[in-house]
Amino acid sequence: MLRADFKASLPLFKRFLLPHWRGVLLMAAGSFLVGTLLSLRPLVIAPALDAFMETHAEPAGSLRELTLNNLGPTLSSSLGLAEGDILGAGMVVVVLFIVFTVIIIPLDIATYWLLARVRMDIRNELTIAVHRHLLTLPLAYFQRAQTGDLVSRMTFDVTKTAAGLDRIAQGILNSAAQIIVTLAILFITDPLFTTALLGLGLFHMLVTRLIGHRVRDKARAVAETRGSMSATVLETFVSIRLIKSFAAENHDAGRVARSVRTVGSAVRRLAVTKFLDGPMRFFVDAIITSVILMMVFYAVSEGRLTLPAAGLFFFLAQRLNAPMARFFGQFVGIQDMLGSAERVNYIFSTHNDMKRGTKKAEDLRDSIVLKDVGFQYEKDRSVLDGISFTVKRGETVALVGSSGAGKSTLADLILRLHDATTGSIYYDGTDIREFRQRSFRQKFGVVAQECLLFNESIRNNIVFNSPETEERLQHAIWVANAEEFIEAQSKG
Image (cartoon, rainbow, N blue to C red; front, side, top):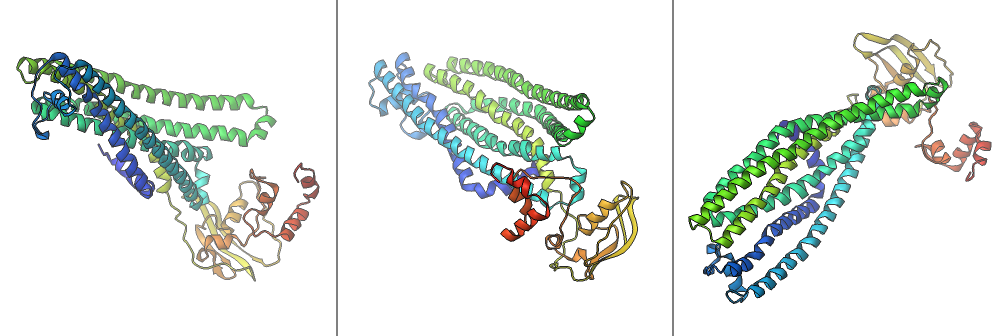
């Protein structure tokens, strides 16, 4: 079931799962043990069935001889129960059932607690890693991408990817344990019938193959439309002054409504496709149950199963349907998760192609020189061409031109937010591409066109990644003429 798209996401899981291997291993062991105990618990009724029906079967002489046909007498003999002691057998069944339950519940709770902890750690680490990686990408990437879509990838898609651990640990491992233990019990009783049951279970695999790729495609569509909707809604809040200034509330409301309806349609298609998984498996379960009934009737008529064994065989075989349906159904859920994992993985597969310099930039001593600088956002569409001038230390230089002439682009080139397509920019005689980007940009002070405040204190907005001293802070406040404004705040 490991399709190419799942294999493509494996590095993502290896990177963020492997550091938690101890927790994942304990969680897997706990889930497997819970599944095993759930499969064994129904067997405690065997002594009571034997006492009710008085089969007089001989106990097993060794563990190798133990089957469903002699399980009741073997347990009764081991526990010292007299033959036909219905009340004693009933007490034993009740006590064993409670003991199994008392063991299963805390183990299941502990496993889920560990699962929740590991999943949250992975989600946090994945979110931080995505954010850190995004910060390494060039400005051009963010100019092409929708901000709301990036936010959606960092929140919705990351959370859904981390939640895939639920399906692997709680769903697949727990169900696998129940399938393995139940099949083992049935196999030692009647290998032929059990092999036939295993073959019937392949119908569930067929359902998974029919539904899985459709779920993945529709889940990807949901993630993409949700990202577009987030971008549209974010634009409303960013542009609220403009919207109100042009009395465009109705226009913007219609734009957002269309985006919401698009997401709703995608979610509905995904929900319907996932829902089909249930009825299809219900139909498969009905076929398997019918075949099991015929097999049990035949086995009893041929003397291959005692009546108590037939009851247990049918109960276990029919009960096998649920974990088998759940086991293969989890792969449909994984396909749902892969739609989000692909979007997260796409971010990590995107890299900054700008050359990384090795030199550390020092304070400007002489000048910044542009020689025949040209730039293109798109091939064959030049924004700047043949720009050459020199800015001496201490000079004030103004770039004047119409809107869209390339003034901001030229400033971005000097900051090396983009690399010039042609020509070079020199900082005290050194091509700026030879400097480490961080050390080079720290030599500039920038007052941007956009008025932006972070959701932080006034102090943090002023300081923002600069060496902080009280003297520098007070000087910045004085230069910005912000003293009166700050003093008017309730907390200064």
